[in-house]
Length: 172
Image (tube, rainbow, N blue to C red; front, top):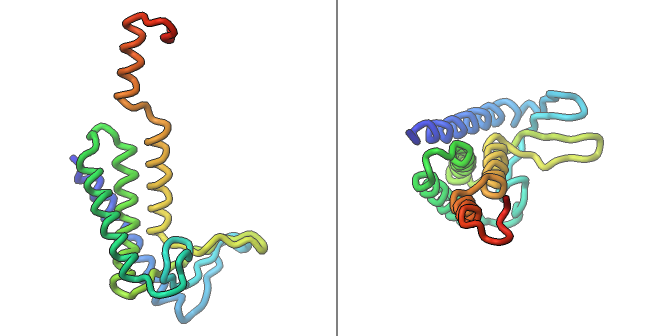
């Protein structure tokens, strides 16, 4: 049943790579495309660092490749071992794996990642990013929501036991 989550991962990678190919063949020579004036451009950018241009100085290709491979292994391992009923967790992990995989392909193939989504307002510019970065950000946000806001069975069981036992101070 986890196949659908690996299909999400594959879809993220395919869309990410297709958009990067389009950007590289279209915008590298023709310049920017204004999508929404004053808010959104598509602009070809090369990033040798990590998300949003961080660690863009120096040659860290193989360090980032190694970290990315370890991250994908950890995410897939967690996906395979987590409870099958937790859809939000599985979607978040699928998005993380797809985003990491999309950027890993670029990094291994070219030694850099193609970014192209530029959001700005007046003089305030968000760092340029891509579909893989978006999937990573959404996946990480969903994972945080799941980890911090969802009830966890071991916490619920402890509260229920205290209520049943009628212990002093137990919620009623």
